[in-house]
Image 1 (spheres, rainbow, N blue to C red):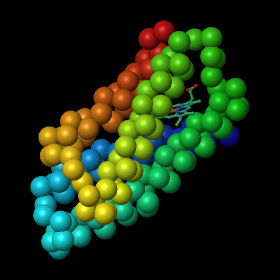
Image 2 (image 1 turned 120 degrees about the vertical axis):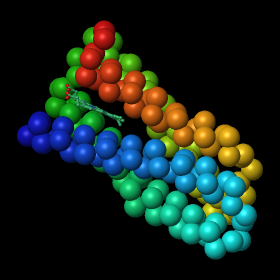
Image 3 (image 1 turned 90 degrees about the horizontal axis):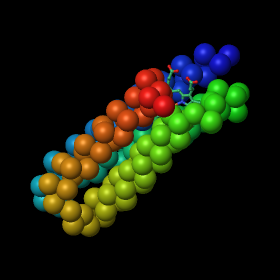
Image 4 (image 1 turned 45 degrees about the vertical axis):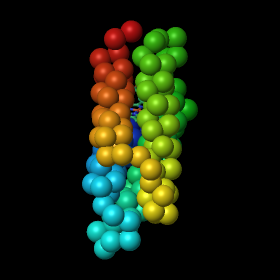
Length: 141
Ligand code: HEM
């Protein structure tokens, strides 16, 4: 049973990360598109569907499967790596919240951030994901 829950966790993580990497990339292009144009409206639909259809459900599934494994006694909290992972996961969840806010801003044609900002924020989930995988697989401490 435990291995099935872990498989579900990794599948959900892949879907969550795919969306977390793609959504800010859409913002990079959307931020240089004039509001009211057909292209801008298409970006809005893509962003909303990606967030509601993939990113939000995948995040919930990641938490459900992950917390389920913790409930099954998977984690020895006397070691350092679960705390390192938890810190990065909190960072990724905060980043998720920031992307939700930007999706709402774009939907209201109220984005004020420049393209450069989205290029930078585009890299944040990648860095956090690398940290999480090293924490959970290498377990450096
Ligand atoms: C959302 C909160 C999360 C919780 C509560 C959680 C919890 C867990 C737990 C308890 C395990 C089993 C650890 C073990 O092998 O003994 C696990 C495995 C794993 N987690 Fe998470 N996790 C979360 C988010 C993430 C995220 C965001 C990623 C990647 C970006 C991730 C990647 C992994 C991977 C790759 C494994 C498999 C490690 C192995 O082969 O043993 N997790 N997670």
